[in-house]
Length: 151
Image 1: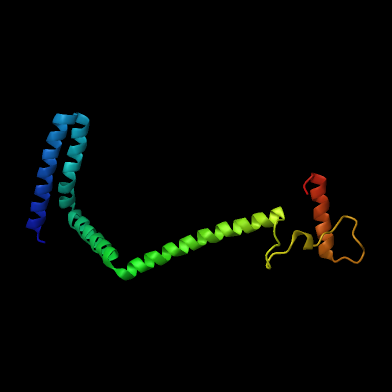
Image 2: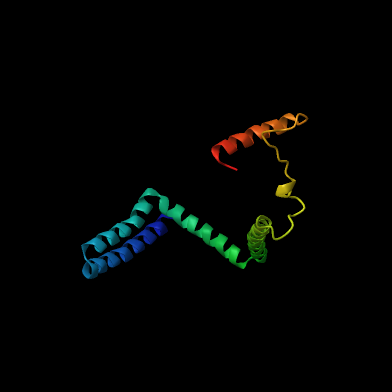
């Protein structure tokens, strides 16, 4: 579009805004009328600063993208796959929480990749002489926890 077309578009938007401003002043008072006047001046300001063309270009690009999104089968297939992935993540989280709840309640055997709490090595402050240094460190930690009343 050339400069004359942009000026005509600006004039049309400003006139429409002027009518809206006049109606707002008469029906709703000064506050709404001043707000409408602010909106009325925006097209003229955008034309004078050269941003009206940018706004129209952005709106056209967004419209092209949206129509391509709506009418493209492959895009909707991708949206469907993304939705399925989200559903699978949520369902797996619920199932994992149920399994952990059962394991804590002792209602079922723990899964293959987890050790049972009884299978974890236990050490005490009075350890045997043949223990590794790791067991001694764990014994020190257990003694500190016991001293604080945490077990």
